[in-house]
Length: 110
Image 1 (cartoon, rainbow, N blue to C red):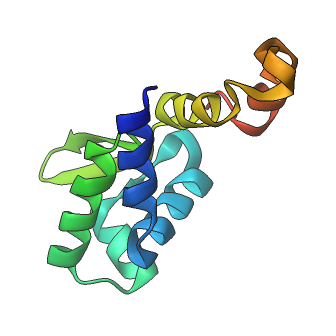
Image 2 (cartoon, rainbow, N blue to C red):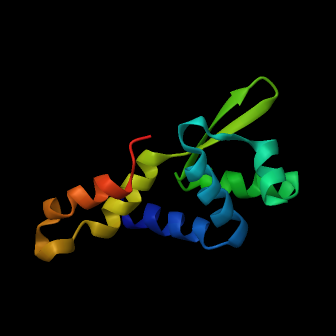
């Protein structure tokens, strides 16, 4: 991940509703969650949610899949690993391989 993408991800997460959506989708794991269920669980209007989901998806933090008329959203664990990797890329005195076990531990491969 480059600096521009990292800034986009942090910007996406710097809003209360988007952070709540992101955390909920991480909790949902590989099953994800339907957009309507996200709206109900977080008590967010559908149009507001749609805008926030688009921002998170544009930042590479979530993904979606159409299921008939509904859309299911998922945390994009590859994107999350990319962001964590960016944060830790120059850690450990220039030996980022030392941090790899930490990245793998905190970023599940769901």
